[in-house]
Length: 230
Image (cartoon, rainbow, N blue to C red):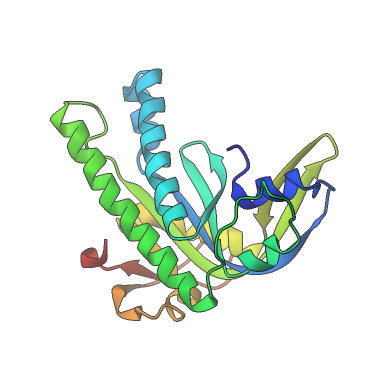
């Protein structure tokens, strides 16, 4: 519940040494609530937590249904991954209590992430409609999603007394920066060229041109998921 399926299984089986991990290729997902600072000033504490939980529940369901894992909740946002390495991760894990899921092939990876992002946007429309019908704050709720594909370091990071099982690396940073462009470009789902060129349904994406992002020396081209796909 606290760590996620794959990290939870690995920790349960004793993968707890700092620095223990591996480099894998993965689709990295970042998402967060647009305009959250304004909402936090308008909603009472319990109402704000209820709204965040609605978003996180919808996001986790979309990720899980399409083979993704939530790795970390961060305020009003979260980080997730889709990997074709699931079978390799799990082959190290033994025991009847392990939660198994089938490993996605590399060809499935990009379709799964795209469909999860589209499913989330559909779920958010339902949340907005429910809140509007009940005259609750959050009827204008929007969530931005950023997707990127590349190498990540996956494993234990932190201090001896407090570890985190997560992914780090330039690909993680870039996915976060792409998600940060959603507000500026008024887009719900954005992806990098590294992701889009590998997606079998490349026609679902529309280029929004090149943009500078913090920490990257050259502008990057970003693509928006077409409205009829969301």
